[in-house]
Length: 205
Image (cartoon, one colour):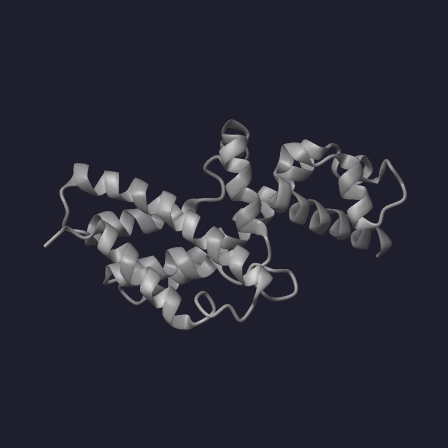
């Protein structure tokens, strides 16, 4: 339907602009121009406000990643796992790849990375506890599998969270400009990232 096409065009244009400039630097007019919408009230008609549009974009991506993580964990747990930290790190990482609407990485991670840094309170209010269940399940498995002392492990989980977002955002940006990027494109790079995250939470030898 025409309305669905318009809504999708506005969402795609807004997310790309937010990823490139940050939410606060993008106006409603910027979004409508990028989306090819001549009706100046169309964003308000479809979404209510720019803030409502931002919230919808955050939830759309968070829901997709969370659903992917939970599906992977459900399968592992049904088979008696996960039995290793590597399996858990794969669940954390892989659902955050290939987020583009028409294939490729898209720009969701860059959008939420910038938004959460500049508007942390708003970001936390949008996400809440609703769309990070898969992430929390992963943390529970890490706590079960990692033999580090609890106080050490909790610090390392903070490092893991911050590091994972930074790395995946950098990967998304690089692949957006060059899908065959020599460093980020090979599967071995993600394999090395998994191994790095395992090392972050495992005790030093």
